[in-house]
View 1: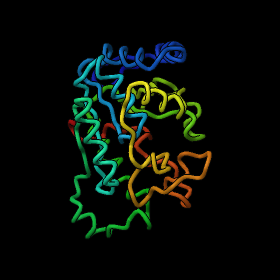
View 2: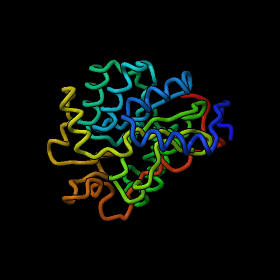
View 3: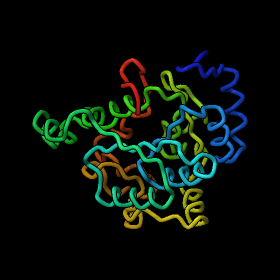
Length: 243
C-alpha cells in the first residue's frame, strides 16, 4: 500500500507499529512521525487539554510542524483567548482555517442557527470541508483523541489510514487523569471553561455542561450526535490543494 505522496506503509507495518506504540510514551510516536514524514506532517488542535499536551511534547522534537485550528466562527470567546495564550507560550506554527463560504453568506443561505436544524450539515460546512482542504498535500495527521472518550473510539489504533492520509493517535490509551497530570507537571495553563465544569468544548451553541461520568455528553446534547465528522475517512478527491 502506497500512501499519497509516496509514503509507503504496508498493512504489516501498521500492525507492527500499533503493537510497538501500545507500550511506548506519546513522545516516542511523535519522534517516529517527524522522522517518517519530515515535510508533510500536520497536527490539528481545538485547544483542549489533550491537544495542548501534544503540542508541548512535539515542540522539542520539531517546533515548526503546522498546528491547524478550524475557526468555525462559533467558538467560545474563552477558547480563542486560550488558543492565543498557548500559541504565544509554546511558539506554535498556528494555521487557522475556515469555510470558503463567508460567515455573511453562510447566514444568508442557512441562517446562523443551522446547528439547531441540521447539526451534521453545519459541521460539514464549517469543520469537515475546511479540514479536507487543509489536509490536501499532507501525508500524516496528528490528533489528540483518546480511546476512553466514546464507545466509537474504544478500539482506535495508534496508526491508521484515513482515506489517503496516515492518521496518528499518540494519546490513544491516555485518560483525562493522564492529561491533567501532564498539564500540571509542565505548568501548562488550563482552559478557563474546564475550570467551570466543562469537559469537552466545541462550538458555543453546541456545548453544554456534561453529565457526570460522560465527558462528551455536553456535545450536541439531546441530539444523539457525538462526533462532528472530521475523523471520518478523508477523501483526497474532495480536498483543496494546500494548508
